[in-house]
Image (tube, rainbow, N blue to C red; front, side):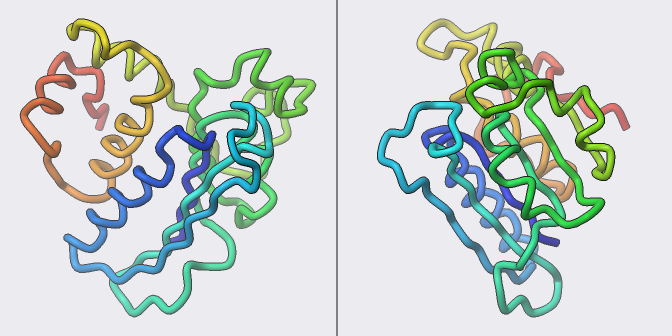
Length: 188
């Protein structure tokens, strides 16, 4: 399976990819990775020029390349979706942080309509997750500086993704207590 995590530079896509790679290795899988950094230094957030991505190809057999086209695209915002969607395999899966698809973010990425709501993603399997809202809920019992911002969404992403593929525990009791209110409870 080939997965590409994409978001703004600074959103933690490299960290999310690295942690997912570590979980993959801990479960005995082979893998190859391909980090991708934006060409512009400090490109404006939410723009195509500022998209950072991390791709991992993993399996229980030998892996020799990071993969040509991802089977899954995790898009943290509209710019990441617009930038990385052309590489996604036909009928691939798009996991989108639906909270980031605001009118302003859509405009910055060059969308006239919301691709999560129009027919432009009909050829893909779309999974909408309110990652920013889940982050806010998870840290609501914590005093500042843990505020409900996009900076923690990659942690929510890693938890959701890792728990769906690998039966692993949160990395610390601090993290575990932060999600104790059931914000990330599985529905299955």
